[in-house]
Image (cartoon, rainbow, N blue to C red; front, side, top):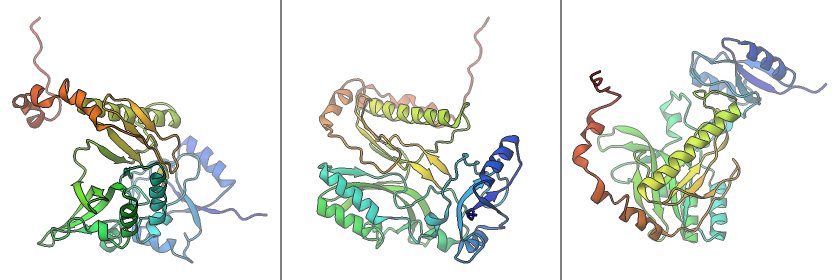
Length: 339
């Protein structure tokens, strides 16, 4: 008789569908029930020899209402690879994997390579991590004295060096730990544009307005929509495409969108990596949710038509009338017309 692998079950209010799902999983897996009081206790149990050392996946019944994993959604009926590898690693960056993408891009004569949001983390940031030292592993340090320290980081320098060798510019999204001169620490979801020809970062933003390049990770689980999980994913992907195409058209620019897709620690993430032209047409798009190079040749001169006519903002924008956008939040209904 074969030994069934262990899965960790986080239990909560059991509904009818959960009972059937539990029975189906029980035929293939051995349940170990979650009863940790803290994230640190959980991590201790994950270590070799611990009670969770052989866990291959984590599943939830209903919604978990308390503890460090509170308010996380239930997984789908398939068993999702668990938390371990992403949080066990000292640093999320897999330089070899990313350099492989660089080499593939060079074969296609790519000049700019856009990586997804939080490129150097192998998981979407959705865990409660109480230990400051543990949390620091997933952020790149920076300061006024060295605002672009990431390009010389031991974890990331192999990728930068390879980009220099190949002459490919990089867009990199990452977690940034900014330390002011007074020692105050602030954590940002940051992105930089690295120029291989100049061998330096020439632009940085901290998750404000995204105009040209966008790395994203969007869950395929969309409970705000009705219907099956498959339909919910399709709806999430539709709204993703809609916003990308509208953004390109309304700003008369090319936009490049790179997804962190596939199976994550908390379930499925949508794909839909794409390149959109200034008229809002998708000119290249990913076909899978696996590692994939999406590329196209673009001519920035095609932006001139839109920027010189309908979207010539210097001619058509009346910013003196924009005060309501700044001063009002939410809906303020106007008075009814006289009957």
